Length: 144
Image (cartoon, rainbow, N blue to C red; front, side, top):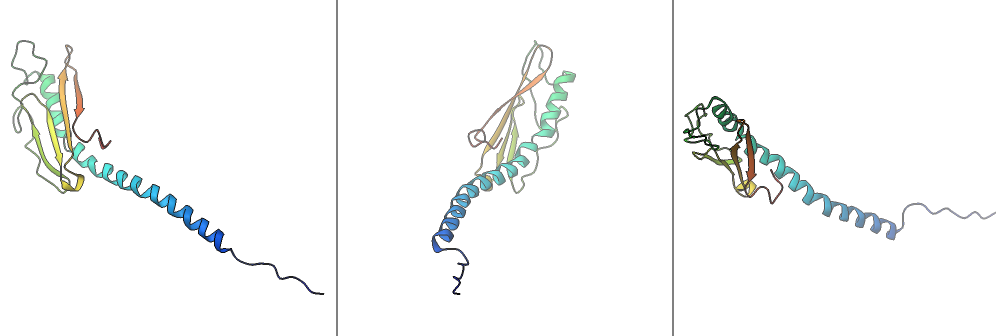
């Protein structure tokens, strides 16, 4: 009796198909991962505006940010005045942060994050509620 030996292992074409599938998956996953890590790093830039944002909201609530005359925009806001903290120091991911007299906060990322900007501008309604409008270059890249 002559028994045929069963084939063991994979054929070359099967291995090539597996390698091709892994290559396609890697080519899709790598750019998505890079965007995800950049977005997670940009959180530091966004969060750096929180103390100033809170101070402006408190300033609006107690009325010390208005020049009078029923203004709906804060007036004379600056670092270290009217309850605002001092300007934050630059860090690995935050290049600079500025605040205008009207309360608009601009945070600029470092070159690691392509110097994207995050700008938030306050608006006060008749009831004294502050709403923030986001602008800046980070919106186009879905970082903020």
